Image: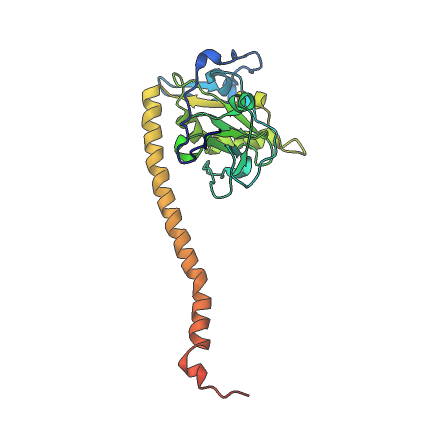
Length: 249
């Protein structure tokens, strides 16, 4: 007799086991373009994404997901906003056998980046975002950063910057179908401070982003109120006691 699954208790995402990772291949990385790089203050350095990974990038799972709830969430590009947030209002779900799930399941602090469509859209996986275990779709690429070198949050915020967006535009401007592959992403250059400085920057940016989100939310509420004004005014006019006295023809 099969035991019923307790949907209220979802197993937490397990931390990555580095001993199971495929060795990182650095042979595809281009030399740093020192002519285009600005001097950095002491302790900082220019690196390419491929230099700070734990393992080779991984393309996501090609599958058909459904609206009805199943065992796993299927994270798609459309589930990620331009601000790097996960939209949980319209998630898709999928059932998978254990072997496939283990290959594509996402972990805390995985970086997912869109390779087609909304190219460059980025998401930092957080357990708190996911009501149940998840896998990622085929038009996303997973990057596992080495936390002893770069904080995932630091690279995530870089992924929202103008420098990152300029890199994306530079890569796709010469092709008809916008697409950036894992090799191209590995060659993106960014400035990397020591870990203590990364932590300070991340905390500062978190605070700024929280204030921006509060301001955005307040503006959206005001906009909704403004949108409601015309109908409220018309209702007041056409449903008033004065209108009821008008002569009917």
